[in-house]
Length: 168
Image (cartoon, rainbow, N blue to C red):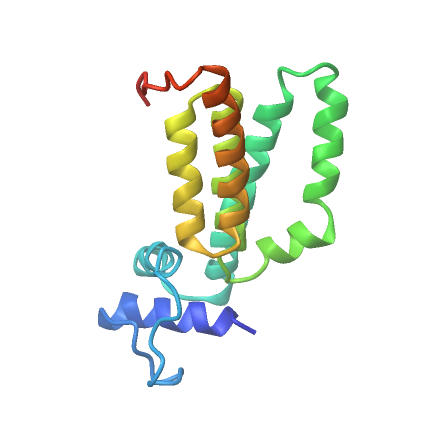
C-alpha cells in the first residue's frame, strides 16, 4: 500500500523539513513530484498528524470534486435527477475508497472535475492549467489532461486557430 509512503514522507516534511523518514526506505526518497505530500505536510503542520487527519484531507478533495460535479449538472435538464445520479457515484466503492486513503487520487479527481467545469464554461486556458496541475500531482491525471486537451483542440479547430486567451 502506498498510503504509508505518502503519510510518512509528509510527516517528515512537517516535522523535520525533509522527505527522508526513518519509517521509509532511505535509498528512495521521493517517487514523484511532491504535489500531494507538500499540502498534506502543511495540513499536518497546522492540525497535527493522525491517519484520521490524512483521510479527512482526502475527503476534503472528494467533497470539492462532488461540488464540481453538482456545478456541472446544475444548468442541465433535470438537475435534481442528474445530481442524484452523480451522488450515487460518490457513494460508490471507488469514491469511498479514494476519499478514505492517504493517497493523491482524490486530489487528482478534484482537479480533473474542476478542469471540466472550466471546459464547460469555455475557460480553456484555465482548464488546461488546472488539468496540467492534476497531471503533475499524479500520473493518472494525464488521462484527464488528455480529455481537456481533446476538447481544447476541438474548440481551436472551430475557431480556425484564433485562440488568444481572454483572461483567467
